[in-house]
Image (cartoon, rainbow, N blue to C red):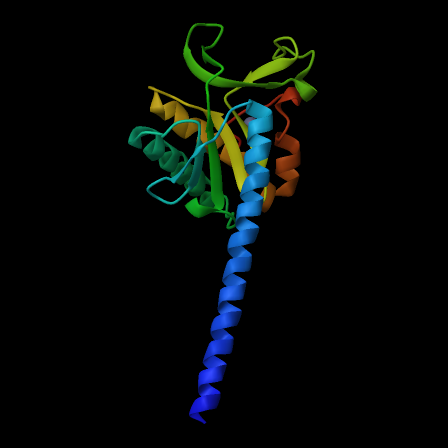
Length: 199
Ligand SMILES: [Zn+2]
Protein backbone atom coordinates (compact mmCIF):
# COMPACT_ATOMS: atom_id res chain seq x y z
CA UNK A 1 0.00 0.00 0.00
CA UNK A 2 2.73 2.42 1.03
CA UNK A 3 4.71 1.47 -2.00
CA UNK A 4 1.77 2.22 -4.29
CA UNK A 5 1.20 5.60 -2.67
CA UNK A 6 4.83 6.41 -3.11
CA UNK A 7 4.80 5.58 -6.84
CA UNK A 8 1.64 7.62 -7.33
CA UNK A 9 3.34 10.57 -5.70
CA UNK A 10 6.29 10.26 -8.05
CA UNK A 11 4.00 10.00 -11.05
CA UNK A 12 2.00 13.07 -10.06
CA UNK A 13 5.20 14.96 -9.39
CA UNK A 14 6.46 14.06 -12.87
CA UNK A 15 3.20 15.13 -14.48
CA UNK A 16 3.31 18.39 -12.56
CA UNK A 17 6.88 19.13 -13.63
CA UNK A 18 6.10 18.23 -17.19
CA UNK A 19 3.12 20.62 -17.31
CA UNK A 20 5.13 23.28 -15.55
CA UNK A 21 8.07 23.07 -17.94
CA UNK A 22 5.77 22.94 -20.95
CA UNK A 23 4.11 26.19 -19.84
CA UNK A 24 7.39 27.95 -19.11
CA UNK A 25 8.72 26.88 -22.50
CA UNK A 26 5.55 28.03 -24.31
CA UNK A 27 5.66 31.40 -22.53
CA UNK A 28 9.21 32.16 -23.50
CA UNK A 29 8.41 31.22 -27.10
CA UNK A 30 5.49 33.69 -27.09
CA UNK A 31 7.81 36.29 -25.53
CA UNK A 32 10.37 35.79 -28.27
CA UNK A 33 7.71 36.30 -30.96
CA UNK A 34 6.54 39.45 -29.23
CA UNK A 35 10.05 40.86 -28.70
CA UNK A 36 10.89 40.18 -32.38
CA UNK A 37 7.76 42.06 -33.45
CA UNK A 38 8.56 45.04 -31.19
CA UNK A 39 12.15 45.10 -32.50
CA UNK A 40 11.00 44.91 -36.13
CA UNK A 41 8.65 47.88 -35.68
CA UNK A 42 10.87 50.15 -33.55
CA UNK A 43 14.38 48.97 -34.59
CA UNK A 44 15.19 49.02 -30.86
CA UNK A 45 16.82 46.42 -28.63
CA UNK A 46 14.69 45.46 -25.61
CA UNK A 47 17.31 43.99 -23.31
CA UNK A 48 15.67 44.96 -19.99
CA UNK A 49 12.86 42.83 -18.57
CA UNK A 50 11.01 43.83 -15.41
CA UNK A 51 7.55 44.32 -13.87
CA UNK A 52 5.64 47.31 -12.53
CA UNK A 53 4.85 47.29 -8.78
CA UNK A 54 1.30 46.08 -9.66
CA UNK A 55 2.58 43.29 -11.91
CA UNK A 56 2.42 44.44 -15.55
CA UNK A 57 5.29 42.98 -17.60
CA UNK A 58 7.82 45.41 -19.06
CA UNK A 59 10.42 45.07 -21.79
CA UNK A 60 12.54 48.19 -22.19
CA UNK A 61 15.61 49.63 -23.93
CA UNK A 62 16.88 50.95 -20.57
CA UNK A 63 15.99 50.25 -16.93
CA UNK A 64 12.81 52.33 -16.35
CA UNK A 65 12.76 54.43 -13.14
CA UNK A 66 10.02 54.18 -10.51
CA UNK A 67 8.20 57.28 -11.82
CA UNK A 68 7.85 55.58 -15.19
CA UNK A 69 6.66 52.28 -13.68
CA UNK A 70 4.18 53.97 -11.34
CA UNK A 71 2.82 56.07 -14.23
CA UNK A 72 2.21 52.85 -16.19
CA UNK A 73 0.31 51.33 -13.23
CA UNK A 74 -1.72 54.55 -12.94
CA UNK A 75 -2.66 54.37 -16.64
CA UNK A 76 -3.74 50.74 -16.27
CA UNK A 77 -5.72 51.58 -13.10
CA UNK A 78 -7.55 54.34 -15.02
CA UNK A 79 -8.18 51.90 -17.89
CA UNK A 80 -9.57 49.19 -15.59
CA UNK A 81 -11.82 51.74 -13.82
CA UNK A 82 -13.39 53.02 -17.03
CA UNK A 83 -13.68 49.46 -18.41
CA UNK A 84 -15.49 48.36 -15.24
CA UNK A 85 -17.84 51.31 -15.57
CA UNK A 86 -18.73 49.96 -19.04
CA UNK A 87 -19.31 46.47 -17.54
CA UNK A 88 -16.32 44.95 -19.32
CA UNK A 89 -14.76 42.07 -17.42
CA UNK A 90 -11.98 40.60 -19.55
CA UNK A 91 -8.29 41.53 -19.38
CA UNK A 92 -8.58 43.77 -16.35
CA UNK A 93 -5.51 42.44 -14.52
CA UNK A 94 -2.13 44.15 -14.50
CA UNK A 95 -0.48 40.84 -15.35
CA UNK A 96 -2.57 40.62 -18.57
CA UNK A 97 -0.42 43.41 -20.07
CA UNK A 98 3.03 43.33 -21.65
CA UNK A 99 4.39 46.81 -22.31
CA UNK A 100 7.43 47.76 -24.39
CA UNK A 101 9.29 51.00 -23.66
CA UNK A 102 11.14 52.04 -26.83
CA UNK A 103 13.63 54.81 -27.59
CA UNK A 104 11.94 58.12 -28.41
CA UNK A 105 12.41 58.92 -32.12
CA UNK A 106 11.49 62.52 -31.35
CA UNK A 107 10.88 64.39 -28.10
CA UNK A 108 8.99 67.41 -29.45
CA UNK A 109 5.95 67.62 -31.67
CA UNK A 110 5.59 70.20 -34.46
CA UNK A 111 4.34 72.78 -31.91
CA UNK A 112 7.50 72.25 -29.78
CA UNK A 113 5.58 70.51 -26.97
CA UNK A 114 7.34 67.71 -25.06
CA UNK A 115 6.09 64.66 -26.90
CA UNK A 116 8.30 61.54 -26.89
CA UNK A 117 7.03 59.50 -29.84
CA UNK A 118 8.04 56.50 -31.90
CA UNK A 119 8.43 56.52 -35.69
CA UNK A 120 6.63 53.64 -37.40
CA UNK A 121 6.02 52.66 -41.03
CA UNK A 122 3.19 54.73 -42.51
CA UNK A 123 1.02 51.74 -43.66
CA UNK A 124 -2.61 52.91 -43.76
CA UNK A 125 -1.52 56.41 -42.74
CA UNK A 126 0.45 56.89 -46.00
CA UNK A 127 -0.67 60.08 -47.73
CA UNK A 128 -2.65 61.23 -44.69
CA UNK A 129 -1.86 64.35 -42.64
CA UNK A 130 0.19 62.10 -40.32
CA UNK A 131 2.56 60.93 -43.09
CA UNK A 132 6.15 62.21 -42.57
CA UNK A 133 7.42 60.59 -45.78
CA UNK A 134 6.92 56.85 -45.33
CA UNK A 135 6.57 56.93 -41.57
CA UNK A 136 4.37 58.48 -38.91
CA UNK A 137 5.08 59.55 -35.34
CA UNK A 138 2.87 57.75 -32.86
CA UNK A 139 2.53 58.13 -29.09
CA UNK A 140 1.98 54.39 -28.87
CA UNK A 141 1.05 51.32 -30.85
CA UNK A 142 -0.67 48.00 -30.15
CA UNK A 143 1.66 45.05 -30.85
CA UNK A 144 -0.47 42.00 -29.99
CA UNK A 145 -3.87 40.99 -28.65
CA UNK A 146 -2.88 37.66 -27.03
CA UNK A 147 -1.12 38.51 -24.81
CA UNK A 148 -2.20 42.16 -24.66
CA UNK A 149 0.88 44.15 -25.69
CA UNK A 150 1.75 47.64 -26.84
CA UNK A 151 4.76 49.92 -27.21
CA UNK A 152 5.42 53.58 -26.42
CA UNK A 153 8.48 55.83 -25.95
CA UNK A 154 10.68 56.54 -22.91
CA UNK A 155 9.79 59.68 -20.96
CA UNK A 156 12.06 61.71 -18.66
CA UNK A 157 9.31 64.09 -17.46
CA UNK A 158 5.55 64.72 -17.90
CA UNK A 159 4.78 61.28 -16.55
CA UNK A 160 1.04 61.97 -16.67
CA UNK A 161 1.46 61.66 -20.44
CA UNK A 162 2.73 58.10 -19.84
CA UNK A 163 -0.44 57.27 -17.90
CA UNK A 164 -2.55 58.69 -20.75
CA UNK A 165 -0.70 56.75 -23.46
CA UNK A 166 -1.01 53.52 -21.44
CA UNK A 167 -4.71 54.05 -20.87
CA UNK A 168 -5.30 54.96 -24.54
CA UNK A 169 -3.40 52.02 -26.08
CA UNK A 170 -5.06 49.82 -23.47
CA UNK A 171 -8.47 50.99 -24.68
CA UNK A 172 -7.93 49.22 -28.01
CA UNK A 173 -7.00 45.98 -26.21
CA UNK A 174 -9.89 46.09 -23.73
CA UNK A 175 -12.30 46.80 -26.58
CA UNK A 176 -10.89 43.96 -28.67
CA UNK A 177 -11.62 41.49 -25.87
CA UNK A 178 -14.91 42.96 -24.61
CA UNK A 179 -16.67 44.84 -27.44
CA UNK A 180 -15.45 43.76 -30.87
CA UNK A 181 -17.93 45.99 -32.69
CA UNK A 182 -16.72 49.18 -31.01
CA UNK A 183 -13.13 47.94 -31.38
CA UNK A 184 -13.56 47.65 -35.17
CA UNK A 185 -15.09 51.12 -35.35
CA UNK A 186 -12.29 52.80 -33.37
CA UNK A 187 -9.08 50.85 -34.08
CA UNK A 188 -7.88 52.78 -37.15
CA UNK A 189 -7.31 56.49 -36.49
CA UNK A 190 -6.51 57.20 -40.16
CA UNK A 191 -10.32 57.10 -40.59
CA UNK A 192 -10.67 59.75 -37.87
CA UNK A 193 -11.37 59.51 -34.16
CA UNK A 194 -8.98 59.54 -31.24
CA UNK A 195 -8.84 59.01 -27.48
CA UNK A 196 -10.34 58.62 -25.00
CA UNK A 197 -12.80 56.19 -26.59
CA UNK A 198 -14.31 54.93 -23.32
CA UNK A 199 -16.25 57.38 -21.18
ZN1 LIG B 1 -5.44 54.65 -30.63
